[in-house]
Amino acid sequence: MKGHISTEKLAALNEKYLPFAEFAQELEDLTDYPPKFHFSAKDNICATGFQARAGSRILEGYRPPFDATVVRKMREANGILIGKTNMDEFGFGTFCTNSAFGIPRNPHDVERSCGGSSGGAAAITALLDKHVALAESTGGSISCPASFCGVIGLTPTYGRVSRYGLIDYANSLDKIGLIARTSDDLKRFLPIISGPDKKDPTSIVQPQLQLGGFKVKSVAVPEEAMQNLDPAVRTAFEAALEKLREMGIESHRVSMPSLGFALAAYYVLATSEASTNLARYKGMLFGVRGGHIDQSFNDYFSEVRSANFGKEAKRRVLLGTYTRMVGFRDRYYLKALAVRQLVIKEYNGLMEHNDAILTPTMPFIAPRFSEIARMKPLEVYQADFLTVPPNLTGMPHLSLPCGYHDRMPIGMQLVAPHWEERRLLDVAGRWCSGFDIRFPEVSG
Ligand code: GLN
Image (cartoon, rainbow, N blue to C red):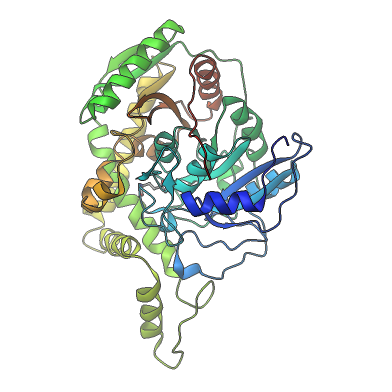
């Protein structure tokens, strides 16, 4: 049957690949696809009927009594929410290994990571036909997993999509976007989730979303982005540049010195914001309650947080509290804000002579879990050096599959000026008509 998915099928897929933190126990059949369609939401996006735990034990049992604006809009457009997808705790991670409710496995090779933090969203999109995932990116959490799982990830301009009902990681960076299998799906669902929403003031002033009317002719490729790449990624990316040239898109090698500072600035800003956001989880308002209410507030608060935050969340609270402290604020937080402005300026400068900026998405193919276990936190952060910079600027970006190595997908990332999602849709449409995206053989 067209678009048919049963709960048994979801259960079987979840046993093998763990894309879901929770999935629907009753599913309406898709005999009339379209207009009806199935979608999933990352676990940090609130939806009635499901828990919203953002990959964290501290939110165990939290059932939001409302829909996030994006979920409401998808449901109003005939969407059926089939589940909440696994993610790194609060979005803190690059491999989805910091997820409290199951570490998703890459559908192309179960020994490898799906990427993070929207790992479950990318995995389920690679596994299910006619599926679109609502995902979220703060510093690359849509591009990275899309690239590792060989699907398409679209991160819209900051403010294009309402964040109402999103569990915050870092408010000045968070964006809700889509992970899809086809460029047609991006065109279909982006207008549904976009637009001003009174409940999110950063979405109010936005130019109308346009879906066409722009043909991309040139892209800038920063030299700095071509360093420290795995040879397989470099080869696939260079072959993709050649294909783009045949499609009428020239690439220009440029220099972008700020790429060298963007990563450090991001981790200062993101952890600073995250450490204040996490203060609301104290075992009183949402999720778990502490056992001993007869102690002082500080002891109660510390006990609940020590028991329920994961290691990476604790590391980020420490880092972010430190960078905001009197005496360090000037040296770290304010300096990082200045770097952020510099990055935006450089992107804008390059966009004056090029329609978009193109780099590989990740410096390597999806790593094995055994390799990730040996990586130090700093090495994990460094893996984000290409996905973090566009997120700092708030510009829309897209990760597209561009090649394969050892059966594993490789992605490229295109960045467009603010509000110019149509340039990304243009390239996505043209690229997909000439490139065969390989989906894994699903045995689940
Ligand atoms: N890997 C990045 C981080 O851990 C990005 C995460 C995200 O975009 N949510 O901060």
